[in-house]
Image (tube, rainbow, N blue to C red; front, side, top):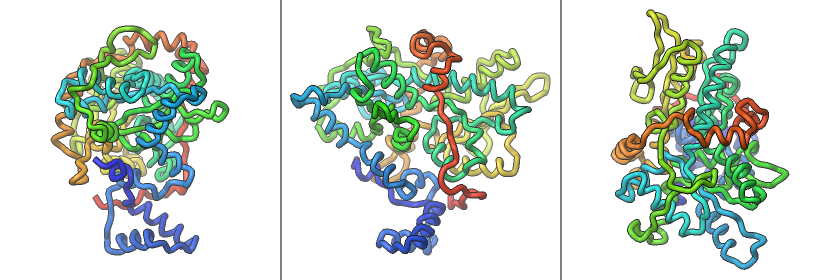
Length: 460
C-alpha cells in the first residue's frame, strides 16, 4: 500500500474543474497539468463527487502545506528528534485511535478486536508513542452535546427557520462540501458539536497536558482514523491555538498508513507485545472496548432519536426500525403515537444520497428533524483510508463486510452511563452548561469560498 498513492488524488469533479478552468482563464495560466484536466472534461470525463474532497484542487497554498505535514515522515521526524540528546525539544507522543479503525486491524491481524487493539497499542509504543487512547470517550461527549443541541433546536423551531432539520457534524467530508459548495442553504443547520476527533484533541491538549504538567506544544498528538478527510479537519483554523502555537490534533494517519508503516518495518503481529490501551483519567487497568448504537459509525441518529423520544414525548424507545428508501444508505426512522408522526429522522450516507437530500432541501421537501450525514457509503468503516483496494482503486466490499461484523461484536454502552464522562464534565469543564463546555466542545460552520445557487451536476 503506497502512502503516496493513497494520499494524492489529482482527479477533479465537475465543479472543481469549472473553478480550475475559471482560475486558469483569470490568471492566464496554461500548465500541462491544467491542459490534461481540460482535455479530460472535454472528452466527457466526470468523476464521483466523493473524489472532489480527496484532491487538492481547491486548497490554498497554506492548506496544502499543512496537509502535506500529515504523513508518516512527519511522525518519523518527531520520533527521531526524541531520540536525540536535546531534551528541550522532546515531545510527549500521544496516539488516539478511532474505534472504526480497530476492525481493520483485527481483520489484518487475524485477531479478535480487543486483542488487535492491544497489538496495535504495542506497535505504537514500540515506535516511541508514550500513551495510546481510544476515542470512544470523545465520541460520547459529541453525542451528548448533539442530543442537547437537538432538544434546543426542536423547542425553538417556531422562532428560528434554520433550527430544523439539524445535520450531524462528525464527518469532515460532508462539512467541507457544505461550507465550500452548499453554503448558507446548509451551514446554519449543522450541529455545532465538535466531532469526536476534535473533542479528543481538546482532551489531550487541554485536560491531559495539564495532568502531565506540560504545555500543549510539548505534546504531539496523532489520530489514527479510517478516513483521509480527517486530515482536512485537523488543520482547520479554529482548532489551532495561536498563543500556544499548538494544534488540537498534530497529525492524522489513516489505518492503511499505519499498516503500511508496519510493512515497511517488517513487523509481524506475533512478535508484537500485547499492551492495554491507556485511560485519559490516568486510571489503571485495561480499557473495556465498547461502541455506540449505529451502523459502523458513531450512532448519532439512534442516540439522539431515543433521547428526544424520552425528553420531548416521554416515550421509551428500546429498538429502532429502519425503513430503507432509495438504498441501504438512505434510510429513515419514525416515532409515532396514536397514528401521529412525532419524529422523523434519516440516515444519509454517500454523496449520491447527499445530492438527493440537497435537491429535496432546495425544494422544501425535507420532512426530517435530524439527518445523520456521512460522505462514505456504508459509514465510517468504509473510509477510503482503510477500505480501499489499492490495486482496483475501489472499496473492498468483502473487507467492509468483515469489518462490520467485527465492529458489531463490541458491546454497546450509552454515553449517559459513562462515569468518566461525568467526572470530566465536572473536573475539566466545570459543568455541562458552562462556558468552558461551550468553548471546548462546540464550534461554528460557515460558508467559505464561492457558493453555488445550484449543486454541481454529477455523473453517478
